[in-house]
Length: 455
Image (cartoon, rainbow, N blue to C red; front, side, top):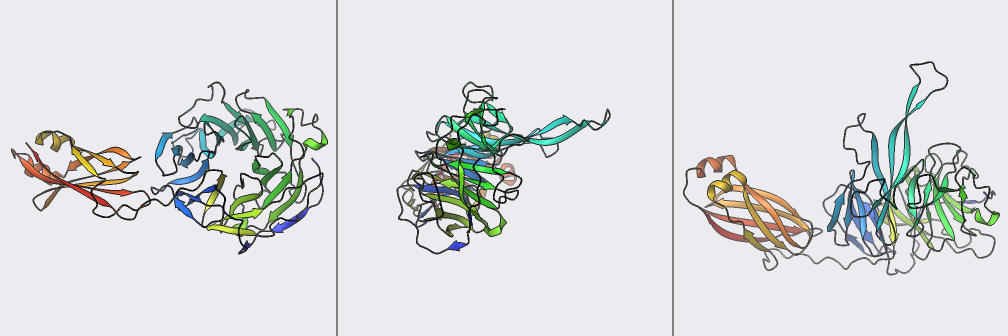
């Protein structure tokens, strides 16, 4: 690791103008939902409206994977859930009973086919200073798992697998990842992995303890697509955002060799770092597709800085943003990609029934009272569904459902206990069924009504 003293730049929010918007986007989380913004912050697009999301990652074609509790949702740009799956570490038992914790930090490959994620597990080891039987010690270990991006994937599946000992994966290309933050000393903090080549075949790279990073901790590393620059969080409290130059992409020293086979040019060197983040902690960084800007988050929201290219052998802070520009207040977990932000979602007009069509399932009155009444609805987009049934002016049943995408969705209308008693001895019941639909991101609902007769 090349060592030298470099400049620190504070990152207070700045009101300087952003670079002109390109056909790219930054995905982020705000108020538990997935959003997209143009790179100049001029236009935001709400992808989901259901809440419950804590992290998001996007592929080059705009496909996204978002973390919802211990499950992963593959999303399109309109918020339709294309796949809902878990991982081998998605343990839903309460704390204390869990064997695994995760997944965290999802990262989708550029081509959208694979997914990497962090996990933790309870590890048991021996204390050499004690006498039996009080020799077992319990601590948390960490690792990185790999998965298909649309389904649960076992770790023994060929071409994927896992690595214990490192966290915070990021993709260099569709086959190579960079892992950071070793959970065991004296392992290197930054290693490279060829995905699927085996659980022990990692390539050691470096640890940097210079410029105030005495513990050597590095996390959430990401490299530009051009393989010329990198950004990491550093420090025990993630209170540094470090920028490195990569003179030559390393051929990789085998694990256990501690990088002794690397040349000087294959070691990166730090060019500058930002410190004093709002709220005391930085969030994970993400590079623009052209490698000239960097997004990150802190206690104020998602921000960006300009990072110049450094030709030749050196680097300096000339051309670097002295301050971070606040892009989206209250946002976190930015992930920059080349896909554009969708056009504004059209608002569904109130009481416009032209796009909402109902089909009530055939059922006898007795069967409907016992099992509920199935209602099939043709909808124009993903969104929420509600249904009510009235006999005359009296409400006798209700139901709720969700459409995951445009097309056909089904919900069940169930009768109240009072209605079941009053209708139990009826030979016929004339009902008015009303279904409401609210598209994700739309503030207004549309309704469709149909009269039915049950015998």
